[in-house]
Structures are given as C-alpha cells and as structure tokens.
Image (cartoon, rainbow, N blue to C red; front, side, top):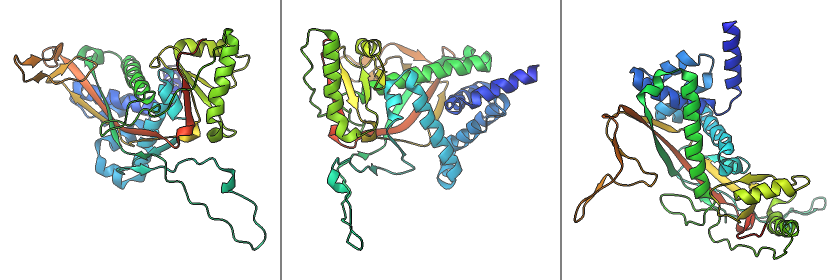
Length: 356
C-alpha cells in the first residue's frame, strides 16, 4: 500500500511542470543543513524525478550547460515552466507565457523583429513572375539580460520537518515573491536601464475611457476601444485583458461569455485596464537559475534593497537587520536573467480611471 501511495505521489508531481525548479531550491537548502550535496538530496527524496537532478547539474556547473545541449535545454524548460506556473500569483507570468518566449543561451542580447501589420507584405504572384522581397522589420526590441533576484530567509527548524511540507512552503514563497515583483515591473511605465527592462506602458498614452453612466455600457465601450487598438497586431489571435482587481471581477461577472482572457493584477492602480496582443510581446529568460545559500552574515530585512550602512553625519545603519548566524537562519538567494519588450507599440493599449 505504501508503495502504491508513493508511486501516485511521484506521478502527481511529475505532472507538475514547476516541481523541478522548486525541488532544486529545496535540495539546495536541505543540503546546506545536512552538510550534503544538492544532487544527493534530490536523488534521496525524489528518486523518480530525473528533471530536478538535471536542473541541479546545469545550475551548479555552467561549463556543463554550455557544452551539453540537453542540460541547458532541460534547465530552460524548467525555468520557463516555473514562470508560467506562477500565473496563479502573477498576471505577468501568465501573460509572458502566451507571448514569444526565448532564452539567452549565453547571448548578451537578442534582437527581436518587430511586428508590421501591413496587408501588402504578401500578395499573389503569376507563374514565373518575380516574387516581391519584403525587408524584415528590425524595429523590435533588443532583449538584454537583466538580473532578477530575491533573497528569502528560512529558519533551520523548517528543514527538520518532512520534505513535502518544505517543498510546499518554498513553492509558496517563491511564487508569491517572484510573481508580485514581476507584475510591478512589467505593468509599469518605468524606463529601461542597465538594471531592468522597461515597463510595457512606457511611452504609451492612455485611451479616453467611456463617460456612459450605465456601467455595463461603459464597460462594453471601453473594452471595444481597447481591443480595437491592438487588433491590427493581434489579427484573429487572442487579445488578453489585464485589469485591476475590481475591474477584473466586473469583467468576469458581466460578460455573458468571457470572450477575452482576463488576468488580475494587484500591481495595477484601481480603474486600470490593459489590452495586449500576446504575439506582440517577447521575453527571454536565462536557461540556468542560480541558487545560493548563506548561513552567516547579516541581512537588511526590507523589501527595498539598502546598504547595511552608509557614511554620513552621523553614519546611517539600516534597520531592521538580522544576523543569520545568531538567529540560526538560512538565506536562499535566487537569481534569474530576465528581459521583455514589445515588438511594436500598437501591441498594447490601456485605460486608467474607468467608471465601472
């Protein structure tokens, strides 16, 4: 009976596309507590999960990843799947999974072709007649790696409990931390820099929302205007709506049929609704995440990154701070190289302050 239960549990987690990513993080943490190796921990706890072992090989041996296509490919798939599975806590993760997904593969940048909606790009040609040549648009974004990182502390006692509980807790922390941070960065109008990619709303002017007094009429008019704005890029494909919480609820309640996928983001200001053609969105992710553990040192326990101290009159000491050694705490640092961009400004449209 116990064997049957274990097999069923293994099969269930094998169908979970995010499991290798989460288990790699758990194995790294548990190995630090047990003075072992992450690969040994993974083999002991998940003997049937080949993916997590391969991900740990790729993550701990950059040379192997660059020389072995199967390791790099597997790591890439695991990370992309984890980003996609974050959709439960993140509208941006679900959205990026619908667009053009690329991997850096040691490239310093990826030039993505732009989208040009022009019916004249293709036409009928007579027999033996020359075929017109259309130049590829190079006005799309260049995706350059940007470090997306977080540090999450865990008490050592947590890893003395059963592995399934640890896996569930680490999964929850990673999806919530990375997911919400991605939303805030993606759905912003912040300019790109050497530190981060530009928000999708940079340089995009909001459309005027409907002034109809009846909420249903206003909603229909607003969605019609938003979808029409991105329709030349979307064509007959999906248009995805991303909305603040109240507007997302209204869309789901008032639409007789949900004609367009609706995503909810707590990172959007109330009254904000975005329409995007997913084929006009491109993203790239480093195929190999970095998991690093520390049990000594001091952390500044603040969502806003800050130096531990700064010279001044008087000198400034950041607070609150935690000594990992004194509190018997482990810190997990996760680093991914991520970037995104629009293949054309017409791929997105938004409104703010809608009246429904």
